[in-house]
Amino acid sequence: MECSSVVEALWSRIQERDWAGVERLVADDAVIEWPVSGERIVGAKNFVAVNSEYPEGWSIRILRILGTCGEVVSEVEVLHETLGQFHVASFWTVHRGEVVRAREYYTSPGSDPRPEWRSRYVEPMDASQSFESLGTL
Image (cartoon, rainbow, N blue to C red):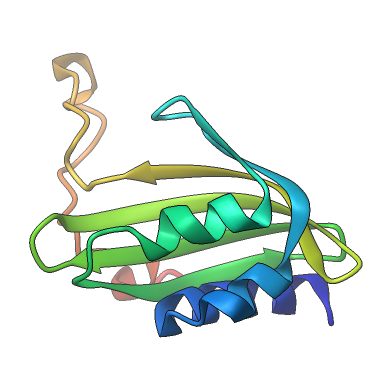
């Protein structure tokens, strides 16, 4: 399976709650890092546990997956009924059809304050806006 297809299948299986299928795509000794919260997940079983035990009410929308064999980047949106909207930028290392390493950055739109000094250079962005909605991609 092509590396970007592995990542696409991973997100799809997470969305479907196909935990056995997720585990088959992640190496037993994989290391997944979440720098924003300062956490490291070691192993496929722990990765599945963290995702499967997350409070229900969420859905995933894949925005894009880019990459060639070995290194893949994905951008997804996670909508949760009570916790809100999250965007996830993930950097995956895939080897022999399995994720062996990843670093993921989760954020919520508007969660970081806009510094006043930038106000003359930027414009506010609605969370639903994207390059696609602006017609530039």
